[in-house]
Image (cartoon, rainbow, N blue to C red; front, side, top):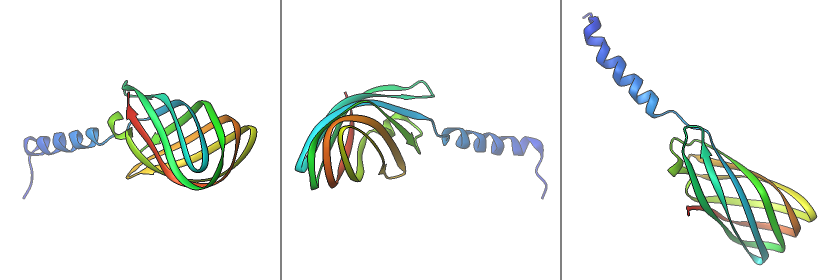
Length: 143
């Protein structure tokens, strides 16, 4: 059986539409975060997510967890980059977080967090002091 061009056109359009809707967008996070830890770790702050498709969202950030951790820290002008995102709404929610850290005065921190198929790579320079190993979650919600 041989298909004529008029029969192939709907199939090509359907395939092109499904590929276009599955395309990922590049989203970035800029944030400030401050917190403390004494076995229990907590930090909060705010930020903005912008995507290359024009979407923008102001967000609230909370990090909570536990472990063997002591300190006080503040991150200003932190950055993050999302991967596996098709829409900005997919960046919202709780990400799994685990880290080992040590710093005094000014220190730098980088970590990768995951939430299903979405990953978030964070980087920032902070002030304060901290020492320990902790586990928890990093939650992003709309403001």
